[in-house]
Length: 446
Image 1 (spheres, rainbow, N blue to C red):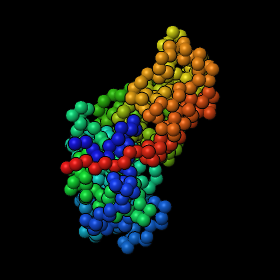
Image 2: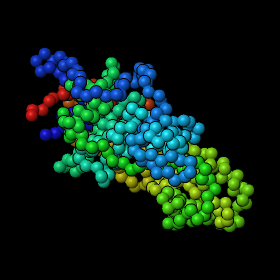
Image 3: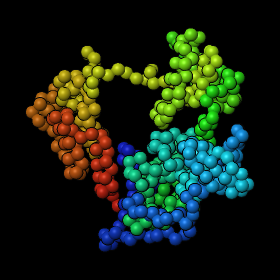
Image 4: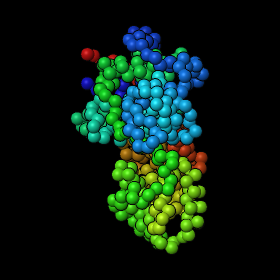
């Protein structure tokens, strides 16, 4: 038996619409699930949440932490702590409600008490692709799942579930979790829930239309703890060189370990490359540059040979993966072959391709989808296609193609490339289009 909520959209979203009565064709009202109680207070994203009955400085440990310094505080998973200050954004001063001890704790090992972040199945900032990568990683099996924030809709959530398909093997299905105006959530309008926790509990008991019952939260590695705030100038003996990554005019780069457990990149400068004063001035400037998209400078060894310790990028550098572009178009090499029926007129005539010529091709792809793989421009040869396009010809709407979808195709086939829509626009329009036009929910027989 297949997934009751599935559909064959090329973006792999699984949408769910109102159930309709077979006799009168009227929508069946939502049925609320009152199976569980939950401390979470749900509210629509456009409403202001009620004030919390608990202090907002209480947190719970979502991982255990072993202290490594005199000023940090150890704790076990599930311990409750009180945040005293957040002067350092990565190391909070906290007090354990179990032992009464005080010390610094890593920010990414705790979550606000009674928040969704403390649930093992909730992943706050995670993309769709990263969700698939984690769920398909070793340690996860059929029924492993996560609830994550939507990439495209602020305040909304998605449910990602791993399942086994006999034809394609292990795969991940994504379900859009929708918000009710009155509070609460639903995947299919057949049943609603007061909170995400209730939704997860319900589908952990039974699949109820999902591809499989929710079995266990997605396993993930314990996060890397932040670099300790006072570790700036460190002893050379605390570093262990593991593997040489490269060399240049100013020295070598190694992958290594700090204190035998933290993986780092170590750059050693050749003696005489620069003065100590100039090096320290530059290092202190780099220390202040902190951004998720920048390689972070952790520490230095100031005795020659000078060492610079930075974040280790396990996927390597970008240099070997980039290409030089002089503008927003690229030109096909001489003699290159490309499919005429899928190619934009400016690319056929001048050999120049851009993101807008890709939009034209996407419009052709849509015709293939609605005609179940029929070759575009049926009955025409390539020269005939070129001649007809120059006269303003566009493929007519096929019998099974909705008018609204055909209008989207024509936007993609605008003669002027700059007047064609962006892919971002197409994505938003198609998501809304498929939601509005999906067939009625059909409950399969037991």
